[in-house]
Amino acid sequence: MNIGSVGVVGGGTMGAGIVYTLSSFGIPVIFKDLNEDLLKKCQGQVGQLYASAMKKGKITEEEVKKGLALIKGRTDYQGFERIDLVIEAVPEDIGIKKAVFQEMDRFCKPEAIFASNTSALPISELASFTQRRSRFIGMHWF
Image 1: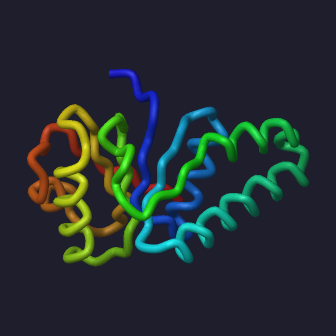
Image 2 (image 1 turned 120 degrees about the horizontal axis):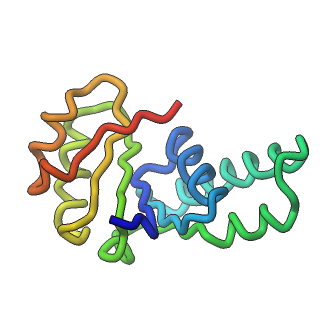
């Protein structure tokens, strides 16, 4: 399967780092969070990561512009029906993760791979909240 686009659910510190990394490699990213304030906060964190990389000479201003143009923030799942890989990066609370994965299951295409950024919860338990156990992985970013 070709991963042409990625969704990230949860735009906190981990989510922002994931959004930055993916977009810096030229991958279009839609990230979802609860409200406009949280979207702006994530966008600010991603902008700071790009600025830091540019200041260190790791990337050019043109690469920053290209990377930032690949990012779209949402408060709903619009666009997720086309996403190939969705990475969950919400707080480490089983109830929150269950609700998020059940929502993702409804809005994402059946072929989409789901990944959890959990550091402690069993992947098999998280996968059980979806209809796609065979397309569910753990992917802890740090």
